[in-house]
Image (cartoon, rainbow, N blue to C red; front, side, top):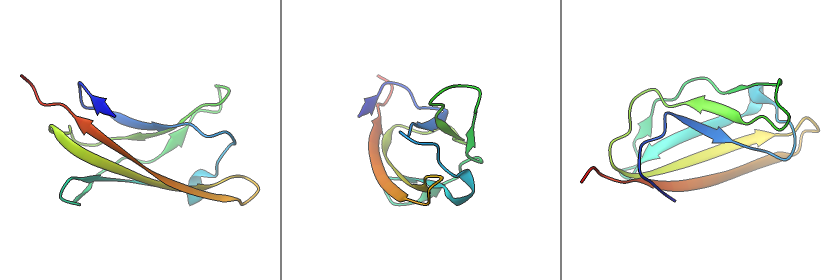
Length: 90
């Protein structure tokens, strides 16, 4: 997806509640450099609340890749990747 503005957090929605202690989220730039992220959190106050991972530093225009892995409360593992582009200012 192409974003007009850089996100301040990564939000991941899952069909089941996931175990945060076994969840990982990584963000890399187009050169493959890892970017710093905050600690994943989930608000149980909302039904189907997302896992939210703060992005520590502002993202410059360019391509990025998110790699995530987690497990449901029943132990079933899941993982995936999400690519996105932050548009440059014109």
